[in-house]
Length: 206
Image (cartoon, rainbow, N blue to C red; front, side):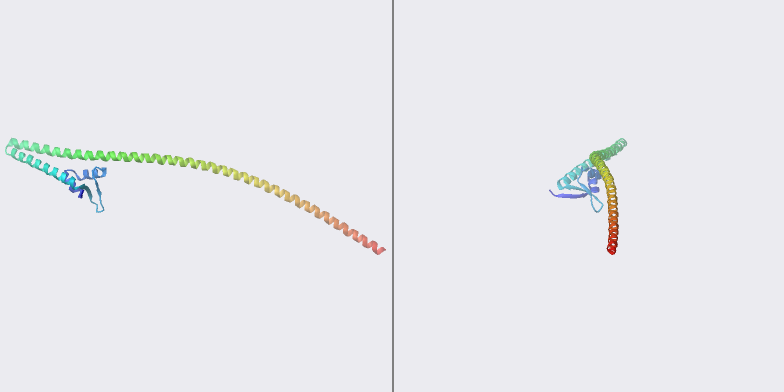
């Protein structure tokens, strides 16, 4: 099926719709189309759809011509002129009414789509909130685990300080023992020296 790209303004002209109505229907997805890179709105139709719309337009124009002819005939008399004026005004009101109904239908369709989009966004927002809640729960667990680790680190630091203190005490005790041994050794050396001196004196006397 051959496709036809028609400017939205042209589509509006052959369907007796306003340009805004056509754009709203495109936005709502009622009509296939969109705004292209040239900044112009287009409607995408099949050739059959375009032929049908043009045919319906021609029938409408023929009917309007027929009514217009009848009105012209009525205008030949004063009473007929008043009737014709009234009918013309009535036809204009009917056209305006139909135009407004078309626009209202498009707006209702667009509103329904927007409501669906809002529902989707609300669902996504709820999912995001649930994910945020899950993340907050995970963060709380991580904070608790971190707090436990910090407590363990403090306990280890306290234990390490106690060990360091004990080691320091042991080192002091070892140093005292070494000093005592060195004193004993020094005393022994002094005793040995005294004995040597005494022994030398005895040898000289002999």
